[in-house]
Image (cartoon, rainbow, N blue to C red; front, top):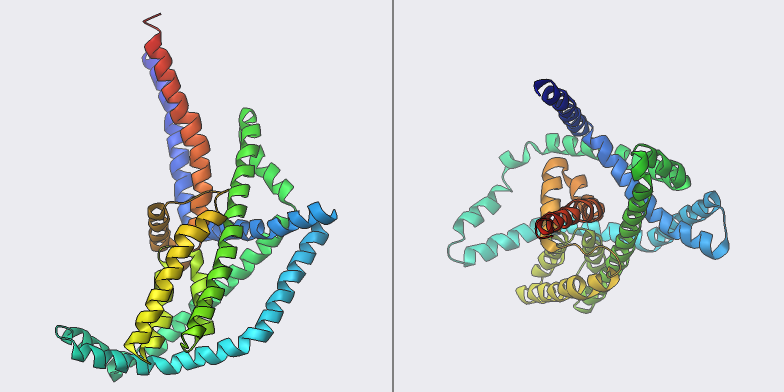
Length: 352
């Protein structure tokens, strides 16, 4: 009995050590894995219009991918030609309005009792001692921006390679699973791809609608920097729960320079659009794909943000979309449901 028990424990021990080494290796290569997952997300985003062109026009994948890349490039060029000069001008205006906004906040905080500490902290930002380490901070930001640019380029290159030949990469992943599980692995990959593609398409359309409605609403209220504020609100729609709240700060702060009443109107407009997007638009667009709970989305953003920073926050929701499909198909259906079935069978046996 001792020999048999030791023979059983050694494979378990070796398997546990292998899993531990894989976990350590994954942690050391977390940035590589993050870039790879981002490339998968971009590849799925490209694959949606590529599949549409292949089904409608019968094109080969390389030609369809080239047309999609050219279409995105042309659209970006046209939008840049039409909107970029105005965005640059508004961005410059925003940098000029920041000191004025700080002074306005100092004045308003001095008029409210109990905010003297907040007023002192705002005044400290304008002191010379606070501005001295600004040069080193700018150098750090420049280095981080260069590193991020390299990661984005690698991500885009990997996404093009993945989208160019997805079948070979799919077969590579399936070959790494046991033979009896390969058919199920193929189905799991297809479901993950469908869920991720549907989520990306729905969130892209939702982001575009939020951008247009916010731009139109702020322009109707005659708030300065309406285009820049609308673009920020649209982009941050991809970061639910946290993004819309942060995006509201820009137009509300700019409107505060004109009057507190206008700032209140901007906040009411953003609350209306944010709730309409969260409770009407997003559920309607994502009714055929994975519907994420707000608590799950927030915890994923906080967790990956603490581990990976801003890239982790941006890729948290696509990761949760894929993880939710895998948990439902593997953990729930293959482990928990069968566990319940076996327990009920064992309970019936003595009665029979």
